[in-house]
Amino acid sequence: MDINEAKRQKGLKYMALKMAFETPNETINAIYHSGMPEDEIKELQYIINAARRAPGYDPEKDIIKKMNII
Image (cartoon, rainbow, N blue to C red; front, side):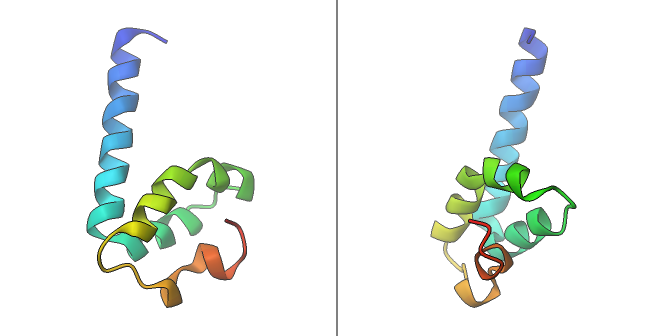
C-alpha cells in the first residue's frame, strides 16, 4: 500500500467513526442494508461498537443485534 492509499484509508476510518458517533442507529442500519455479507459486517465491529457506545444509541433499533450478527 502506498502512502496515498494509507492516507485515504485513514480518512475513511475517521469518517466512519465520526458518523457512528453522530448518528449511531442510522450508521448501524446503513451497514446492515449495504448488501455486505455477514463476515464483512463482522469486520466492521469496531465501528459498530463505537456506534453502540455513542449518545443517542437505541438498542431497540439495532438491526445487527436483532439479527444476531454481532
